[in-house]
Amino acid sequence: MKRLPQRTCIGCNQKKDKKDLIRIVKNKDGEINVDPKGKLEGRGTYICKNEECLNKAIKNKRMSKIFEMEIDESIYENLRKFISGGEING
Image 1: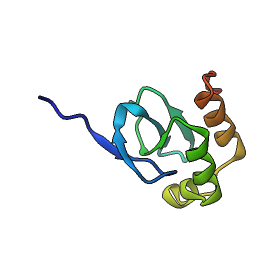
Image 2: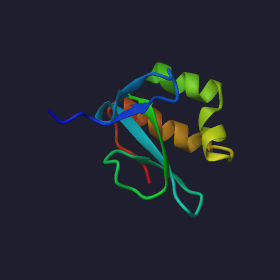
Image 3: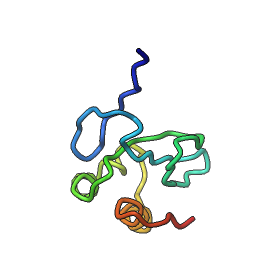
Image 4: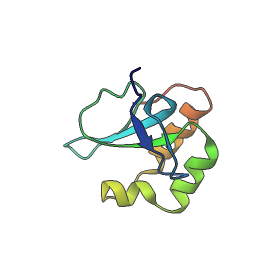
């Protein structure tokens, strides 16, 4: 039986199957994007598909620490829309 890759959520800090998380990527140009398919190049981090984990990550500035830069509010808004079943802008 093939094991599914595990990743850690930056909100709740729990290990979960990679397919159950949302990937966020910083590319070599310093742009941050939500990566629903998990195929974009760059440094990635993962977050659960729920608002509570996103709020914890924002409060603790986890993404800023991981990507070593300030995170624009539009990134968080994109994540909120995606979590609630909407489309991603940009």
